[in-house]
Amino acid sequence: MLEKIKDATTDKLAAAIVCVKNVDEAYRFLSDLCTISEITEMSKRLTAAEMLRDGNTYNDIAEKTHLSTATITRVNRALRYGSDGYAMVLDRISE
Image (cartoon, rainbow, N blue to C red; front, side, top):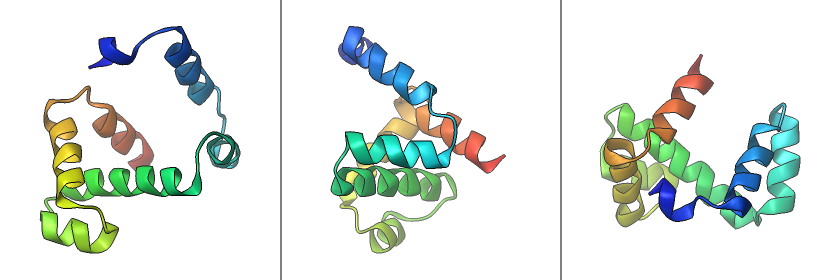
């Protein structure tokens, strides 16, 4: 999957994310880069990934996050077969 999106412009985006130093800076960058809906959707997906790792059911996750079961399935697929990005981030924020 990474090879499908990796190019000079996505490298620049990744570098921009890495240079963010704290939560306040992250909010500032995200609010300039994304719509409120996009930020909210991404946060719901991260919550779904965390809940999936904790063994919650799709119905519980859908009820809490208001995500569709199709989106939850995509998050679950990424957790199981993806690039381990969710796992890496969830491990780091729980430390």
